[in-house]
Image (cartoon, rainbow, N blue to C red):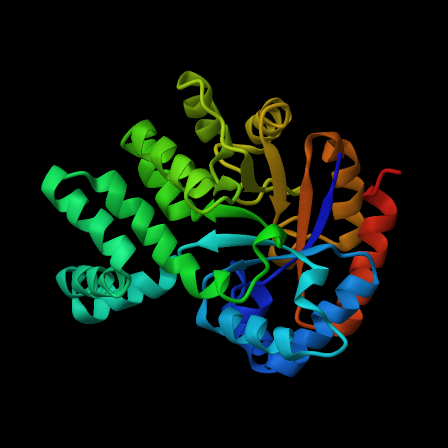
Amino acid sequence: MIEDFLLGDNPFIGVSHLAQEKAREEAKVSTVKNKIKVLKAALNSGATGYTFSTHDSNLELLAAIKKEENLHIEDMNYYILVPYAQSYIRQANKAGAPALIQKIIAEIAKHPSRLIHALKGVMMIDPKIFASLFIEMNLSPYMKILPPKKVKAVLLHEVLTELIVSFDLIDLLKHIDHHVHNRLNLGFGIETRNIGQVYNWLRKNNYFPEYIMTPLNPLGYQMAPGKTQAEKAVKEAGGRSKIIAINILASGAVSFEDALKYMQNVKNSLYAVAVGTSKPWRAKENFAKITSALRQC
């Protein structure tokens, strides 16, 4: 049963997996004022939350929302994707991996409680501690703004998910899960574009996170290893984890009407659906349609 209808942030930060020019154009019109208009339109048409990466522009947006009179930050549920991987890749390319690691350690050291845990990680040579603190460091500025009860989940970015699965680091994933749940008091999940193989790995280890975010669309775009296998994995995983469907329009290659028809067939396995746009009129139109078609009374 679908509980949350989410506005996604990709158009706000200029991400389009099929068209760079389209992404640049969307980013140009995505001023803070326009983003707030989009959020208002989405909420007024049935949206219940916002899913976003820890990109600096989202921090700016949330700070602005907190000052808004006609849009309250408590009006939405939040699903945070951590970390914003592209930022770290760019930093590593520019300054090198050692400099990036030094910067991360310096950020951790600004907070005494985290520094103690970091030193423990050094003494025990335990990467699990560093990974958990890295996640916490990325979340910290957002948690100073957002109402904790409205933050439903912290989702591990697909890059880290794939690394963890590839190297069979189940203990690391469980440790991060435990840290997020017990230290931060937040729900935890993973993002993946390889749901078929990730599901098999989770089942093998008899572990399922509370949330799984994954693409789901009629083209099978970003649904690895294949559409049929991905759909089967979503159906089976939906009984154990809360599935959040993203990229339902296949980066614009699928019409909204075709996407809705497809979602009708898989909605019983889903907990939430995310749709992104940088235009207020489209947010109003799309969320009115999707909530009408998929919301179950």
